[in-house]
Image 1 (spheres, rainbow, N blue to C red):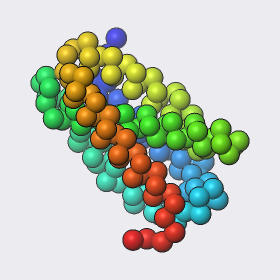
Image 2: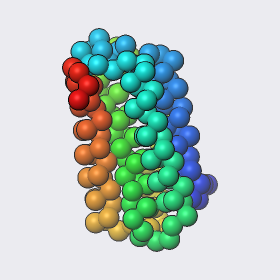
Image 3: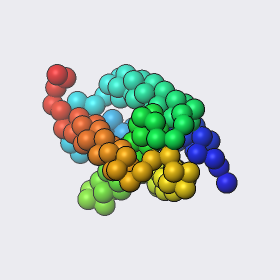
Image 4: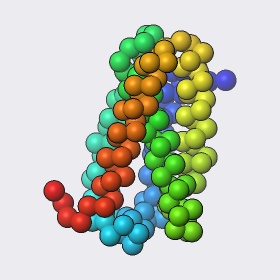
Length: 156
């Protein structure tokens, strides 16, 4: 079994694999077709640089932190946001009755990693239920903001 620290370090790897799926299967074109989005391959690439940097920072710092620290909460929130992004891909695939680029890595990596990471965080008593609820709220707000960017018609 993996330690909590190892699980935190798997999060950026899962994100990288997910972005490869979205990139090579042209998520930007899919998003433009389905949402009228401004998402281009350039926009996708540039918008994911800060996402990668934040996820790497939170995951590495969370892996180094002791019980109940803010970076553990934020690292859990980051993984939960990725899982919620996976829910978006799953629902979009069902709604549009077609494959949403990113679905496979969501199901194969995001969902199981989220489950195991959350179980381990609770087993190690790294977050209490209130802190976990806070992480879930942060993840939900982040996901709504990211997914809503697919409806932008022009750059703000």
